Image (tube, rainbow, N blue to C red; front, side):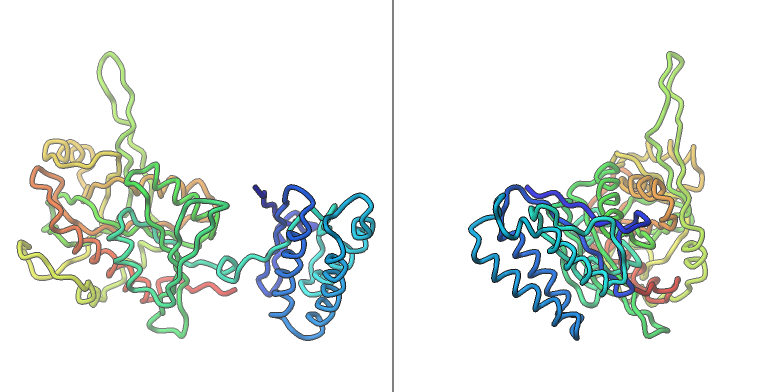
Length: 384
């Protein structure tokens, strides 16, 4: 099993050149010459991409080194290559520094028990928005709107499947880079784990939660409507004493920046881009967007009585669900990511009549709103 560690520059940070390149070392067990050959070949692919004299210089050196490697069955104490490892390391180091214009504390191949690889172009890209979904139907509803869709997996790091794509901005010749992740199970703990992995892998600039929820019948809220959270309330926390149970709700504010953009996003064409048939038992012909408070816990609520208990504590409550607190808790543990927003499609009213009839439509309504909102260009697209 190989372990991965990053090269460090003199200031202690991972070296990233103006070309957006990041190198990492993968240490391997044993003196496997094929691992070293693979490392040289991978490094050669990068130099080939750059081209010019840098590539030719590296290719000449790599060819000479690999020719010598063919003479060795394995690296040993008496190996000519092993005895020259300092020279090998120095030559490779100088070549990479020349191209990347970086200095490293330790680029050395050491005792040659290592494999140098390059992070893929996809992994190097700056991600504008990470979108978290809880169900497969929610993920599909978002992904169908993406351009340049591709899938990325990194089994050495996490279990996630990342759907990568872009959303073009309407008023600019630019696009947002998007990563969509769906959960293996519903709930705040799986949501927090997935968000943590996504942050570690992609370091997104912004986070959206685009999923379905149970609604609270107020302000003419209807099935198929979309609720954008101005706050997320974690309602499961409490203190239990002999006198009874006292709630200790936790509140997470939505991104002030993104919420301001939502308030000023008046385009309703998203209602015509939902793309699935609207069930017949709606009170009105089209979905609407609301802004309000959303409660998040670990219960699927199908009880009028319990829902009313929550609205008594939080009169502005408009929806209930099971993932946003986990996402927001993970985000707010990362000081460099302070912009998160939850967008929920209403699929039931969290009462005894709870059915799955509206789930598909609600998922697609939330996705259509989120994508159209992003297409309006609420924030500046990132640049590498």
